[in-house]
Length: 549
Image (cartoon, rainbow, N blue to C red; front, side, top):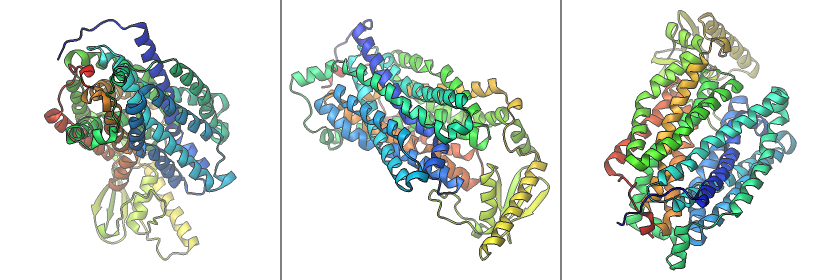
């Protein structure tokens, strides 16, 4: 392999990085608006369901966008390898931006009934397809403009865009929310951040129209070496398919769960398990993103010197080892009353195992009527962690020295069931209060500097695994099928393993009763990727991508 000397960044390269990154920031902004406003959107578009089902359905609609991302990667990746990088990811940003703008105009369930959630899910699917084509195009485009020895540094700017997009969405939401007040924001003000995206779309399209095609693709096209069938070459030939599989299980799968734990699951954990109010949680997360984001550039540049693989694998290892202690410290910092109550007065459910069902109910159709299920449902609704021990007879909840017997709802009339439910919930709530369990986090008792520090550490883990990965994925595949080949493992890893993390972690917590057990999902996936990546994935930093047409 010929050695290509590193050189300073040219004006054209700076323009490429700026334009690609700015457009991708806006695209992630569009995507994350929905996730940040999932609770409000649930009330607007799934108002025919009970509150718990509203949140679950809104999260499932959010997940729908992640599920279709690999299909967008295949469709747009094929176009990008056949007709070019520039025009393909120009199309993706148009689809994403228009879909987001329409969400801001879409009437809710109260106005048009079931058509509202159906159209909403359709728009989420379009957003997911567009994002599936966007990332691979932007990363490939920037990498193919970068000089040898600088690809990690150049593509790390693209890696900041997801975080900056999330940060921008949080800022806009906080600004609108603070200006108009919570009631007006929940009623109609939530639409403003979606509608504002049309301005961002216009800027992004204008900038991207001024860009030239990547030099690697231009040269390959001039030489007549473009692929006639990128899908067949990428996935129908074992020599390439095995690299696609390794890229998934040895890189992106673990990277994804660390990313979503550090930048998304933390919000659910703060507001759900720790009962921190939404505005405060948004501010704390936004501050941590502001502190952590520069590390994308640091680790991207460092990967040009010491390699991509050591940094990514180190990030996976450190995250897997420290997640449990960090989240427990987060509990003590954000809701010390809850941490104290959990230590002093553990909650234990004693029940017949035959009475206990799987507690996760994503469709909202299951009815939990046994005494065990009723007890667990009441505790889960209050985000109370508990242990379960085997017993006989009706289920009992022990809160410190207080024991409350549950009831079986089966066979009761509607009025009797409602009365029993109110009595049982009242008794549980009173016992929790007597033993120091708070109904919400007390802002005066929060250790906010420590919270921001812990959240920033989690974001730095994200930067370790995510900062160098675009360059590494680009370097793993030849130019003629690069867009297609790198996009699929990236979006399966991030769309499926990462995007489904909140729902999967929620299922684990609902089943086990322990609010920390959802962390087992990212830890196990990270360890699997760490082992496979360490053993089988090769370092790529010295690869000459121009020699791989």
